[in-house]
Image 1 (tube, rainbow, N blue to C red):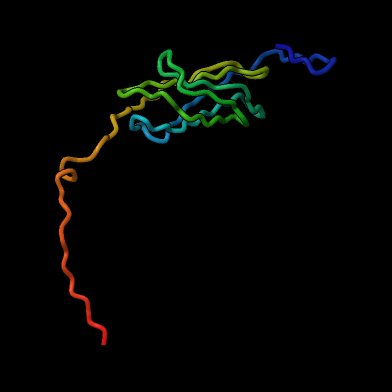
Image 2: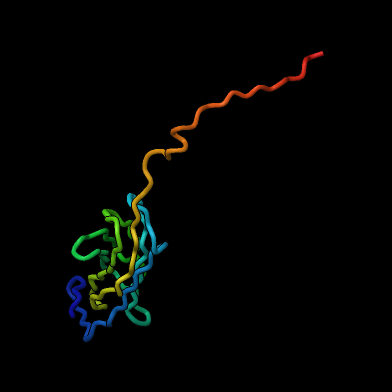
Length: 135
């Protein structure tokens, strides 16, 4: 690989293999929530990978972001109800190879809507209270 710096060209004989991991705040989410995933990328001793990471559910892109100091925090959007299998894909850079995380499971449940039948039937109650008289 070559990295052009001004007029000089620096040669990296072999890019280091990267390792990409994906972490979610919880294995469960409610439809409409936008959880934030953390993606970590390592590339060898003394190497802080840069580049981009994209999180997908099959072919659906849920979010992407820049890797800074080996980490990216990505807000997930467009999650569908059901069991999801998310993968983080790293683009690679001049010193580290592209890579992908293992699939991480996320269960997205239908959220509650409206009011419960009990609260809809509740009626206000009258309350009588005796107040002390002023002297």
